[in-house]
Image 1 (cartoon, rainbow, N blue to C red):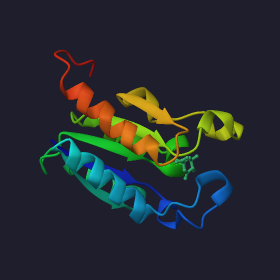
Image 2 (cartoon, protein in one colour; image 1 turned 180 degrees about the vertical axis):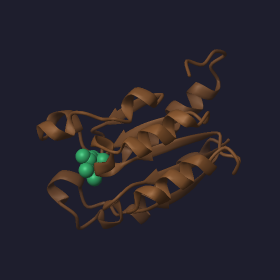
Image 3 (cartoon, rainbow, N blue to C red; image 1 turned 45 degrees about the vertical axis):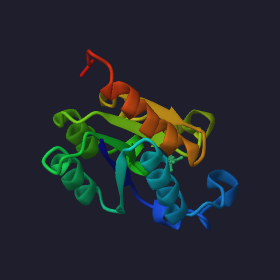
Image 4 (cartoon, rainbow, N blue to C red; image 1 turned 90 degrees about the horizontal axis):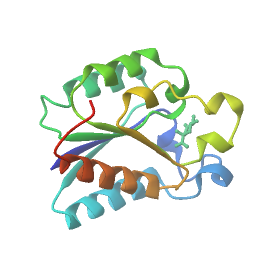
Length: 150
Ligand code: DQA
């Protein structure tokens, strides 16, 4: 199974960005963990990061055409207000899991609402870099389910 991992805005700064909230692990290290985790399961991942909403929309739209069986998506701050990303997720058939490093429900009020969650297969939040690994595992488990919800 080939999985696409998308990181949204400011996640390129992981390691130095608000370490009290996001820890000291860099994005390159997270991507390495993901590739290793997938390899052990005979899957593969491709990791991409963008600070630009339109780029993320383009990658979501192309996911199926590019042969991805699922998407693990951390939309960053776009989570809370990007209708364009919400509509892109709703438009595609590829299953998608929303992930967050921090527990968005335990932070500021404006982070408690995700416009993506309702159109994602599910949401994983609060486990640091492990959120991404759990997202991968969720997609693998979903692909083995005989019936799909969306
Ligand atoms: C985040 C949570 C968002 O609220 C924030 O804007 C981010 C990171 C997380 O992974 O915890 O950029 O998506």
